[in-house]
Image (tube, rainbow, N blue to C red):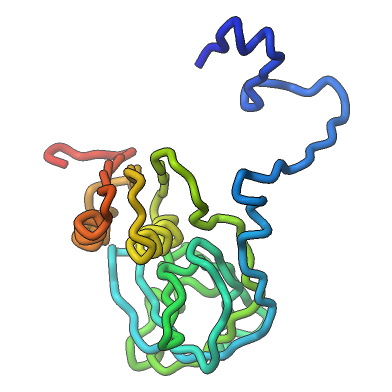
Length: 223
């Protein structure tokens, strides 16, 4: 992308192509909705729950469902720290894969990290060893939330990063969002794409529609 003369005259820069010559001070700018932080939940309580289901989405990605003992205040798009009973001293941050529900059930999309201390236990464990295991959630955080606006929405996700955007899309259906939405979903191979039927159903439910563009970095013949 090249800057126009008008942008140059306004002293606009491309941060991704610029090198500061001195120390700089960066101040986050509040958005038109009153600032991202003001619109996000910050529930810092510790809430326990039990793993009730695990759905295998690809060869190394699963969706884990947890029934919480008590409600946890969060917004679609945010994340939380998760600790698994029997794995002391290990917590990992996972994004909620669905908006808050009245039944206090939450879900997360987890990708196996080879050599990881937590994700292989969630992905590889036998159902009998995983279902019913207790977890503890704490520290709701994140500024990725669905905020009001008039322009089209463009969402970009790769791999397990689809989780928070699934939550945003489900929230958008609840809000009857009329803005057109495009989702670019990146993966290595066709086998790494998942929730395709779910995304199609969300597209039918969204008044403004949903265009899903799969992007493969290592496409094979026939993909």
